[in-house]
Image 1 (spheres, rainbow, N blue to C red):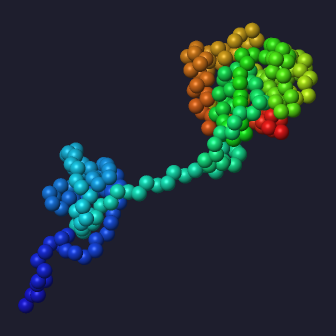
Image 2: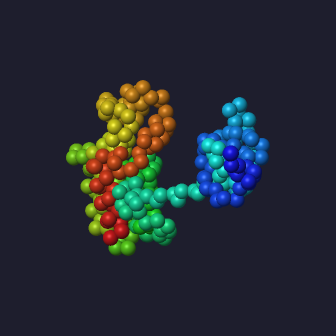
Image 3: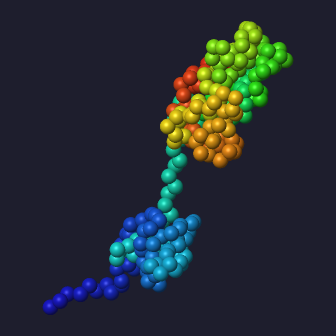
Length: 266
């Protein structure tokens, strides 16, 4: 004779422990009370939203033993949020200081030539500068650099660092920089005509920065040579969006900015 289980309660209603299953997206379950079967598309506090194969959505409470997974009773629970991982390094490669508050700004400053220079320095060294309390300002050119330095009045507690574009022997910029001899001022530069060139071509997705004939606006010439729209502001935003860390910049710029930060914070 066959033997029958005296407990005729459906298996999903019995009091035996059932596993808790996170309601992860795309998990396919059946709601026991209605028989609605669908994939999880959302889970809020206390509810889960299912979508069936016809695209219909239904919201159900996250009740104990309220769902079937592959025919077995389960208790759906809200997925635990993964703790966001904290970067161990800043974009400049320095050791990150989680939770560090910006330091009160020092009297010293770092001057760069233009807005694009300042934005690039912020993109890569911003975290470091805030920890050190160093403010970066842009000058719109360095033609009046000697007068700018005099007006700033550098001193032992207010050092001034200046980053100059195209600082190579014989350039106009090199002649201007040579006129600054203040002991509390450091003028350094990179060899590139414009800060755009300090971004590695591979990071921007080009083979090389084009050569622009003398007498032609360099940025406009670059846009024309690369087939970009003649909007240098938009072109720069495209370039800047490709810079994620110091690895996207040329070493000739990296060393000079680090040198200025060390000088101002000494």
